[in-house]
Image (tube, rainbow, N blue to C red; front, top):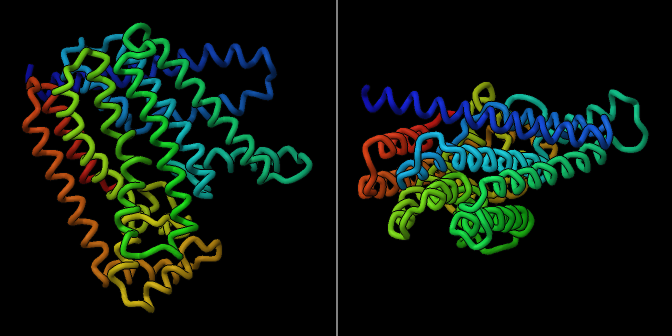
Length: 364
């Protein structure tokens, strides 16, 4: 069997095992929640919907971190860790959509919009939007609780004080810190020094996304398998720049991506007011008049398609898009160089290379 065939079979088996673990876990919790009230079903359904499908990037990074450190294929511990990461990702998406006022997720209504629609369909009293936000916050909190519960199910390897537990705890704390820095920049960015906007935006993507998308999942898998400190440092040298390239590509897609493939409206990041690295470059490189236009329109609920088109034009013409693409290439090159130095067997190294290539070059 070739390396490519072994990789495909092993990865397919792992993804299926994670899906099965999530289904079993949520089914058992559904039984418990139903004893409270059938009215809880929409919360459970929202969680189940979000953890069904998706790219499984974080779970796969965890898996190949495990395998690279000598863990056995599709072992129970790493399957459980993968399901915990998927639950944490789902919780983060629910809360992120509320914070960003995003109406869509993966081509359908976001969770808070689903609850708002439920309110309207049932003809309930008071404000449907407030109900939608409140219900979605609680759904996200429940999902966070499930993530912790699932991770604890790993057992001794994830016990208090273990390297894996320290990584899992740090990952969750950093995401919350990054989220706060993100919303802070939306409101404080216009009155802060523009010279530091790119640096601030890079810090946001590092802690809000890059570390928990690639670096921490890879290290988590390695730690569960007993990886050495040296290997974990090598994992970080590879996965952190990869995660930063991943988020920068996401930022480009948030402005220029095709709604059919991204599942989000055109220019959605501009409507949400995200002060990404791409936007920070534009504010720094554009003319004062163009920068003022971006500042005046970014995040406005009445942002028109014409406004989106004009901001896109400014981003391209001033060189901000090109500067972001250069950063993506630089981070990608750093990641691949670090990957070459990792002392891994052919199978996990090939798997990580393919994941990295898909992450950096993705179109959706």
